[in-house]
Image 1 (cartoon, one colour):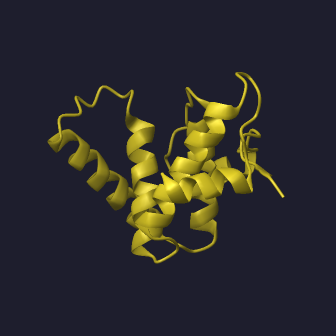
Image 2 (cartoon, one colour):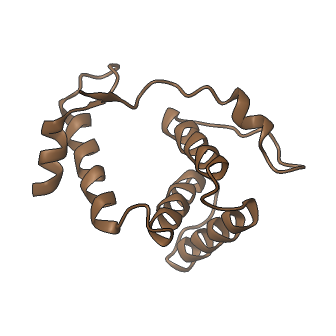
Length: 132
């Protein structure tokens, strides 16, 4: 059965779980809001503490800066996504191979999806991800 990952996330509850003093997030693209919602969901399930999250995100930002990211804000959620991936691998939820497989599957699904339509992963996309 295809999974529709393009539906907007309801972040209203997620916002109540922000650490004290955290400003309301601003999202420029739908995937940024989804990355935020995934982070909150993983925290709620006990995968990491907010302190561990902040440390991991800080490490990803420093790594990006060391690799030439000018840190102008436009790449913030790319660092956020890298932090999620780092924690998922560190905690043994997925390995890098699985993350790469899903990345290729999403790319395949995005290329076959008409502009403006929701991207829906299918078993064919995942099979394509195995061969990329």
